[in-house]
Image (cartoon, rainbow, N blue to C red; front, side):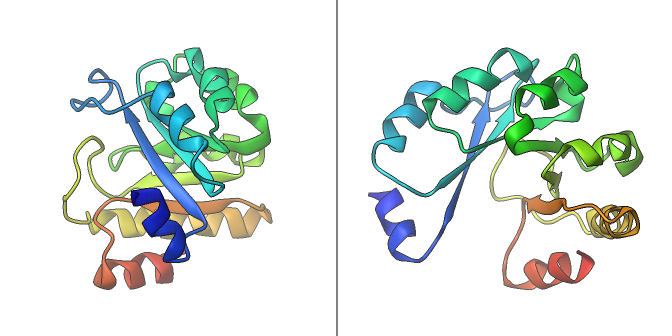
Length: 169
């Protein structure tokens, strides 16, 4: 019913947070849920793995219906290998405290970078304003290098913070 509601509202993407209780404190759902909701929707499934060593699961989530898989740089044992595994929809994410510089060498290999604008793991948090500078820094690097990399933000987005994030890049 919720998928139908957001589809009727005009959404093209569904952002699905997968949490393992290890990388973040919360636990959410996993592959069986994604596989079952995939049957109910043709929207783009942007699956965000907030799990330890996500390399173990990337292929499984793709087979369950993920159109894109996002992994956290901080969670990967081998970030370059993880990006290889999701090369067709390469996406990486960083927590608020992780510098953009930690992933800048990988920007040519990804389609999108997700900047967490809250601490990952719990809904309803306020947008961390210090992340706006991180968005601007990443946008500057992408433009300077002439790359085709999208920037996605996750957390605390509302009518006020949406404009801030959009202006930042």
